[in-house]
Length: 147
Image (cartoon, rainbow, N blue to C red; front, side, top):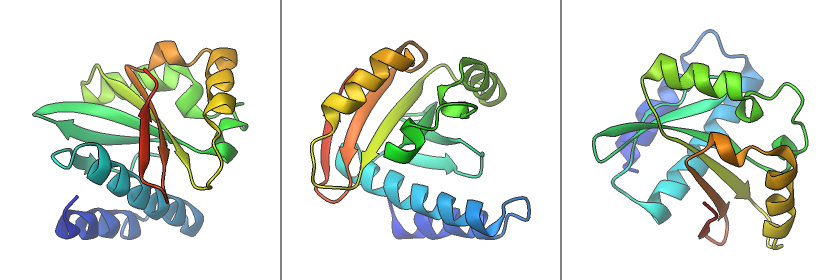
């Protein structure tokens, strides 16, 4: 992701009066996560919008797609969390006129938690709502495609 695009998206977040300070902080962290993911996965991806409460809108070779970011905290707070709710996912897809949704599990430690995440995916049965699922180790810049 180009620095200018990153700065524009950060300004969108910080200038959004609907976001609390805590939500703005969370969105800036998500922006850093998605920026690093894009750099390692496909630098041609473009972030179109990051201001939605739970989802990020990207463009991949001219096709708009949605992304949900998940970490170890989010993963275990499933009750009421939109990224694990098929109705919220479907509503986002309709609102944005998209068909593809990706789920990216962001790991920020040096431990290997893919097995925990794999078990969680099976237990929560969320894989059917996402076209692609990734694990991404932020500090190691390691990416694994699970689906």
